[in-house]
Image (cartoon, rainbow, N blue to C red):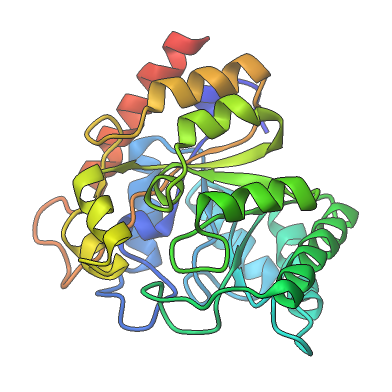
Length: 295
């Protein structure tokens, strides 16, 4: 990894509408997405959902090299709270592809077992105990392979709300993926969390949010998917997330992880004009200006 934060800006396929959720929307080709990432000047990409890149580690590495992109790692939804389900075997297999592509970060999400992110059950005491144990087991497994595991608090997963994030910080040793959008929607101020616990943040998903639409998700007036479709996620600087404060807190702590531009998008067809890359351009330029000011 390079030392300058300006060279640690990566992309995520979901900014182009590529998502693991069945029926999410029109899926663009890897060729278009990776080509446009390089046009924006991004240094790396998260791996994306299963099937987006080749499953064979050498083939994945070849595709990324063709586009002059580094593999950051990827969003990995796993069942972590279900008795009798061990997430380690599937994670071991995934980490083999990380080794071939030199990916660095395993971004874990504690999914519910249901499709999508529009509803979720509540964890009981046993469920919490198992989930926290699995987080530490997965973090140790990844560390053995030279990979940093992080937990991604995410709307519609078992770790969404502020008290749930705090419990993970208190009762697990795993680092966090600071997703500035999902935290805000779940009721956590991402800038305040960054101020309070910068040492626990090892990866960031940088997105901006329309707080009025987020409030409708919080109150149940809109589902998460409906709000995404309505444009809840905005380019950096165009919403209500305090991007400048977040970057300032991380920089003061000496943060050397990736800044991943991730603006969840739903497409209905192949874009006839520039498409999602226009918003990614805007986010990249805003983040670069904030990073320059923070140096």
